[in-house]
Length: 318
Image (cartoon, rainbow, N blue to C red; front, top):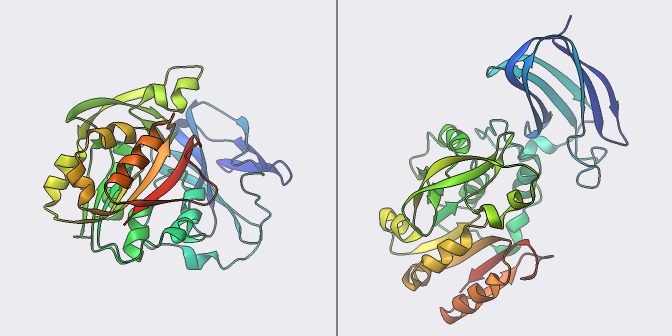
């Protein structure tokens, strides 16, 4: 008997029904894109003692329709104690998506499926013309998608800042052989020391130091948390030894307001481009725009976003 079997797949609901036939101590069931091998969905499993039926809808159809011509199918994996017990392949169609696959970039079961396509297929940041930025700070680096994106565009030296140990592990594996990538296993914040990082156990992409200004505030249960070291942007720039920053990117899940407010003007004056992924601005983005204008920056929002949105992207440039 196979460790698991696919009972059915509903194309309209994008729903999988699966039967487990294997004991699982502490593991997970994983669904991946067959062509890019990026994780779509991960379900934690523990103390499975016998046969068990389960179902899941990895992505709502309105978010991503698996009937698209550029989606080839699925890889399903059963993992226990970090060992792949079984794997099934479900090919829906043949595509040319292989040309977007990045060599030596493992997601370590982070659900980066949409993000991966945004960077490497759809070129989400193409409108910002980030090519030629040689010295880059990537704060909120996760597994390194933006780091890789900038390497593809000619970056010569990158500081990748990430505080979640699960993502740091992926970063170190993905960029271990690059001497121009410096991994900083800390969180950017307004002070140096330690902070509580609130996180989701099944999704390393969701984590924030700011409980009251994040999606965790609306949860019906307390988020998991762990202590992480912090560093200020001023201290980080001092450690780089740089006299100029070509691109500063902040995607730090609502900690950006603390970081920006606590960072002296001279750091931004030595920065040519500042890419800000903002979260829950609550009016604070207006003050940031005014401050950047006073320092000689212009700004451009990612199409579809404004200063009134809860989340969005804006580039400050000279």
